[in-house]
Length: 88
Image 1 (spheres, helix red, strand yellow):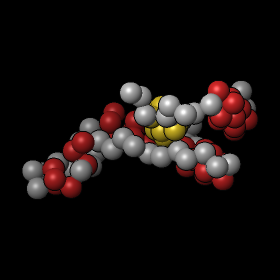
Image 2 (cartoon, rainbow, N blue to C red):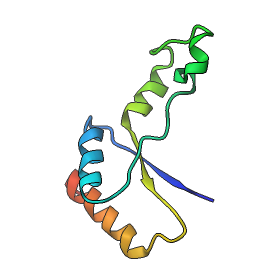
Image 3 (cartoon, rainbow, N blue to C red):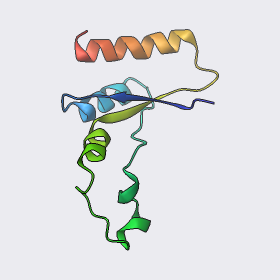
């Protein structure tokens, strides 16, 4: 069962898109944190910056809502809001 739809925003505007969607009632989140940044790994010597590709992805990813009752009209609304934001 899919429950998230990850979206990658490469232009440094993830926070702005996040806020734009939240203000519009879209419950986006940031769900992917590089595994080694979880607190349990700190005691093992892992530090930020050790995996720059994972760090870059983390800085660019937001998750769009995805659930069984999501209507096609809701999907279209999310798409329109994102397209309007990125200027597509």
